Structure formats: structure tokens, C-alpha cells
Image (tube, rainbow, N blue to C red):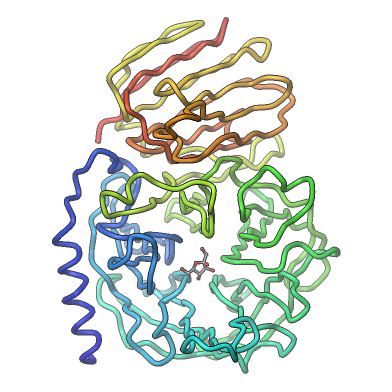
Length: 472
Ligand code: FRU
């Protein structure tokens, strides 16, 4: 251990000790940083029955600073235990941040691949796109998911295709027909977003295999790419920066979505569908997926948004910022890719009310409301008096109405999606977030919010409504 690592351990422990951890907006069911800042989920996996969720963590700066990996473990993805920081930015190849990456499990071992970020000293000589930075690919292994070996630098920018800028990052590894493949997000020198596929026979030595891009330019940078198969569908997920034009006008600054892959992405004989968003709310970015030991595809996103000037979070005053989405199962029904909260949540539900047409409740911040058999598209809900969720004019919308004090929205206004009809809505509310699953999860809307009261009203004439408190 270097002297720097020792100091970082001490400083992190000091910062974590000073946090209060029970302020009003701390979540009950969603993972948050102990103190400071959290962004992307990293290294999601299950090893010997235990779930691991690592996260981009900046304990010293609530607005984000140098990144390290924090670590949570769980046996059911509901109760998580914080395990501290396994990866500090303490090497010459990751000194400006242990950036995002994945876990690959094989032979009972955990292989963590991440991007070692190096940003050279501030200087007018650098543009930090083609000069002034490094993106290194690093491997760390662990036999038990709790003790981690030495960091091994396995690729640097000179190992990547020469038409790429220095922005290459966020490795995601899988195995197919005996060969290992690694996807990384990239920005080309022509400012085109891409995913790069590397291959390896031994998980250590990697060479370039192929590149994935759309026929027409689609953004200038793809971050956190992911590739997986679910219920016979092949999905390429990417968090894209630089989408412009009418379609993206009233949306988030960056997008997270997926292409369906028809054909074989590895052989080059394939086509990509249109890009579809994973989530239509305000706060959703950089999702990562993994397969559970019982064969489910679970995805977790960062319930936040980078470089966002319009809105913010009231938890900054309390010394922490951002959280993950609640884990979601990705599944296919009637040919449509959908998401639903993991089934483990069921055992935490306490049925409070089953009713029809409308519901008015008060006094519970952490709940699930399920509205099904919605008739004639009649659906409207108002949460904490100032967040309206409604279907109107063929649009499903989240609308914040606290224009004057912005206490609940913290600057958020409207997000919507064109949907032909609304049949079923599931609302999952925690202390400071709401996730709304529409039509059996064909559309999802996630947002942070900062309720000042616990009032909730649902109006859906003819529909059946089930309201459960979530015990935590
Ligand atoms: C996405 C991202 C990744 C990067 C990480 C740094 O939110 O920008 O591309 O690895 O965050 O924290």
C-alpha cells in the first residue's frame, strides 16, 4: 500500500464519519453515497449468492471530485451493507479517477475491469479530447469479492484505434463461444460516438475486434456501453452525449437508451434498430446490467444527470447527492422490451388499501401504488401536491407545478413520452425519488423529488388500485 492510499483511506473514513446519514431526504430503498457524491453503478454482479454493487464515489465533494469505487453488498438487493472503498485513485494510471467499469465472474472469481482516468495539469496547450488526458484499462481480481488484488494496467490509449480521441472508457466484458469480449465507449476524432469491441483469449491480453456505430452519426460520445441478450433479444445499450435536433429538444442533456441488434454483432453481419430510451424521466443515466445466478437480467441506473444546469438536488445541503435507481428486471413481453422492479420487493410490501376509481392517502413516503385495468386512458396522480403524473393528448407526462418556490422539483419541469394508450401504471416512491412504470414497464419515468408532505391522490375512473407500504 502506498502512502497516498493510506492517506486516502484515512480521509475517506473521516468524511464518512462526519455525515449524519439520517436526514429527511435519505432514501430507504435506493443506494446512496455514505457522504458526498455518487454517479454510475459499476461492477454489478452476483458471486456465491452475494450481490455486489460498486459505485462512482467522491466522498470529499458533494458536487463531484476525483472518483473512486465505493462498494455495497446484499443477499436480496433490498438490504445493502456498505463495505468501504476497494479502489482508490492511487496509481499513475488512475490518479485522476477510478472511472466506470464492470465485473466479470468466472470460476468463482471476480474480474473487475475499469478505466483509469488521468487528466494532466490544467494548461491551455491541452483540449482534453485529443491531448491532456489518458484512458487506461485496468484489471483487478478478487477471489471472494471482499479482498482485491493488485491493479494491472492492461491497455492504454496507444492500444486503441488511432482514429479515436483520448475518450475511450467504461469496459463491459462478456464471454461468447469460448472467447472474451470487451465493449468500450468512444469518441472518434471526427466527433462520432461509437462502441469499440476488443477480444481476448485469457482475459488479460486484448486486441481490437471491431467497431459499432450507427449508419448516421449518433452523438459525439457513447459512455457506459453494455451488451446482453434477454428473452431472445440482443440489446446494445449506450449513454449518448451530443444528440441534437427536434427529437431531443425537450429532453435531458444526455440520453441513456438501447438499440436492438438483429444478426451477429461480433461477425459484423447485423443491423441496429432505432434508439429507444430506457427511461423518459429527469434523472437516469449510465445504466449497467448483470445476470443473476437464477438467470434474470437486472439493470441499475444512476438516478442523476451529468452536466445538468436546469435542475439540482436539495440533498446537497445535507452533504450528499444522487442515488441509484431501484434494481429492475429487464424482460420481454409481446415482443416489447420492458422493465419492472425486482421481485424481491414483494416481500417488503404491506397491503394498505385495495380500491377502485380513486385513492387519496396521506402519511407514507415509501410506497408502491399499482393502478391496473385503466379504462379509456383515464389516469392522473398528484404526488405531494406538486408533481402531477398524467395521461393527456396521447402523452404520458410528469409535470412539476411548484414554479414559484421550486422546493419539490428543484428546477425540474416537464418530461413526457408519446404513448398510444395507458393500461397500467406502477408508482414506486421513496423519500426523495419516484419511478413510474407504464404499461407493464414498456415505458419508465424516473425522477428525484423533494416532497414537503406525504399526500398522494390517484384518479383513474374504472381502474383497480392497490396501495402498499414498503417496509424497509
Ligand atoms: C458516465 C461517466 C463515465 C465515466 C464516469 C466518471 O456518467 O462519465 O463515462 O467513466 O462517469 O465518473
